[in-house]
Image 1: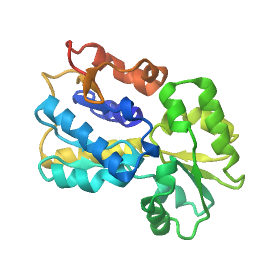
Image 2: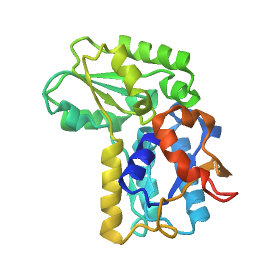
Image 3: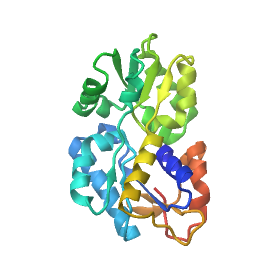
Length: 257
């Protein structure tokens, strides 16, 4: 979620963010759809309980969006808009040249991703790449594990591919490593900015963004329901460091998501 949260903070630095992480149950990609739905609902509910009110629930995870958006919307909308994350297959396919979709094993095998390909890339050669271990490697911020997982996915990516869809928001954080592994031959397509833009559009349609007294918004973290601080691994990435200032100024007991 770091890339999406950083995009939101860059667009609205005065907005307060709750980052509801779930390290106790990572990786989500190996869980059943019902387990993923349960975890997504739990994360959203604890954020709402902590905040008392939310302007929006953002699901900055493709795997969670694939399985849980309908249940989240049934519970929270229309009072709180729910914004999901969709692999940016449509813009990647616009050039009409071969693309690859890098995503978790769960998202790769989902009917949801297959429908996106059928709807937006029917006339384009699309290679699904199940990125074994990449989300977990990014979560750990271990350079060796990241390099190994990126190399594995790059080896599955045909040389004629000119665009790579990053179908997991974790992958955004290692875009430079991915580009290097692909020898710079493919453009990377990410969803973070589009999700941030859609979130602010939905909030504006329903009112104003709540802030706490003006100035820079606060970043509050929940880890599997517990108040926490940004994990050290998050600070290994520019997106995580961009959120640190808001998190550092929080009073004791608050967390970020």
